Image 1 (cartoon, each protein chain N blue to C red):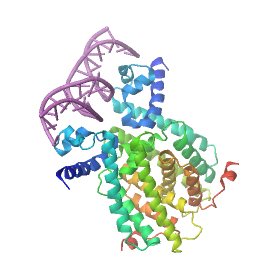
Image 2 (cartoon, chains in turn orange, red, cyan, yellow):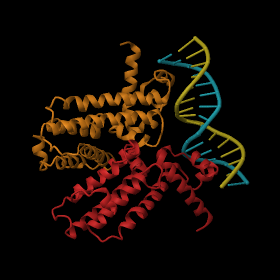
Image 3 (tube, helix red, strand yellow):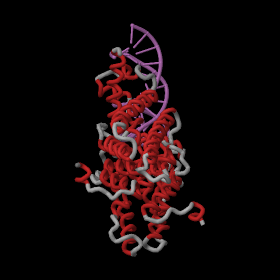
Image 4 (spheres, chains in turn cyan, orange, red, brown):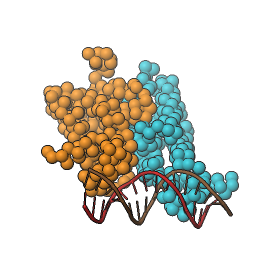
Length: 203
Length: 203
DNA sequence: CCTACCGATCGGTAGG
DNA sequence: CCTACCGATCGGTAGG
């Protein structure tokens, strides 16, 4: 890996943090350059166009998401344990993770849902891949017998997604610190378990 | 109401539609002026600053929301009937209502959650007012005995909100036409009723 | 990876 | 409500 690749990674790291706060459109090449102590054209040359930069940021965000959410969850046994691990890592990473502005995909979904183009298509495809992965984990929990055989897996996936979106909204916009525990209680109800007390869950 | 007020309303109507698609930051005074066939400074003079325009758009959006969601629902008897009416109007208006880009508040929440300032505070206050109104309707359904006395009203409010956010996401970004009916099934489960079939519900 | 530059557009102002 | 204008910044290019 040469120097160019290294610089590119540094640019993307910074861009990821900035885009999580300003949005993918609000992220400008100028602010990114000055945050890095580089010239605008020096940053620009790595991508060739703004939408290529935006797409590169989305790809970097997807890699980080997989590393922080899916990878650790795969260490749990397939079934309910893994499904709960996915949810816990997902919500922790998206709502109060390392990105200062919260989940980039949630922001990008709202920003690009009405903006046709390559970036829109990329956001949509990334979301679809994640939903498919989630659905697969749900189906495995049906296969192990931990969820009822007649479970509507798509509906469960929809509602798990709903909990994360609401937690993100309530914590990030409303500073409602109970948001994450509300989402967890929502999941418990979805999985038809009695809601666990927070301290018990932490232990 | 003089001519100035009339023009202002015309500007806001157009701004509302544009902002729902481009976001409140993406809405520029220049594009708004050309969409209206006015000069930039002619539009600008009605507001004095861009953030004043953004706030005026939010106020106009809140008025429309109340007129389209809360007002019709208040014609239903307090309790479960009204709560269901609120949800139905809410999701219809927000997800596939008259604004071409969907709910302006959902877009603004993602756009301004990390952007301190007057607009951020306005978005947050508007969301809080709506959550309070929703909570009040939930408590009335407890009062009528249609919901259990030990209902966690805040939790129910959180989860109703979650259904709407997920429906908005899945329909607008993912073009998933089942999104609204999934949200309705989510509500049915929240209210501990057997999910109704779509045709029965329509009749 | 830089300097130097391009036309377009941004929010906003002056003056009428 | 307009014309005419301001400095700043946008995405992007030329040339090295």
